[in-house]
Image (tube, rainbow, N blue to C red; front, side, top):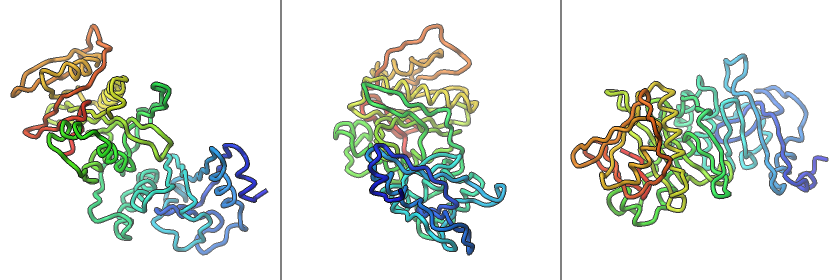
Length: 356
């Protein structure tokens, strides 16, 4: 019964096991407490491997984020005082009450950030510090709001566009690499349009700044296609709060093959919902006055849109307490430029993400 090769014969076999503790690299403890044997050898590893080998199968490891009535984290820096039941190389999906991550094929740094993101918020600071002391996270890694923030699940939605499943959700710390790959996948002309000059390198730090948000004063929404944990980012939207006026500036980026499918409008809707929930008064954006596509997109918002020229740029703005009588359902994002202060951010043909 516990032969992994026999377990793997089941089509779409799903194995659900409960762990006692998991460290930041993905090593799993299940049959022993620190210096105290808890049970006999289990069949957990057999089912973990069997399910992973099954066609369409999945291996899920579940654990409460804390023990001892919330006084101790079950996600620990390193399993140094107990037996490892499941090696990190066999771990795929890990689930706590704070989220789900897929560790398979990830680097140590990606694993650590993923595990910290689903730990209890009270222990994330210490886990982050321990990971840096252990060298799992580099010295350049900076702790941002997303590490300690609570992921706003209400903003997550999966829908079908042209026969393909697309998940639109808030960005997570583990999305930095996907966002960086999104930049690398851009057509050369879109790179020039987006960054206002030719670029052959895209700094991981810049992509990290887009994914490391606090979900309150700054929020990034991503559109992801593909398998959970290995998905590809095909659209990005971001707002950044200007506390002086309690308004948030928005920006977008949509991959060339996904333009014209309404993705920009869906991302914008999520950004508006997130901003409104956090008490932000409204949204604004700068664009070229000769860019009707961006203007139409912004005017999809169900609020009264104000148009104002500022230094040869068109400023679009709306307040959430001023609903519009009519809403334009047209969509489009093409050839516009955003500006924050004196710095320009050119788009991918469908908007831009401010990285500075």
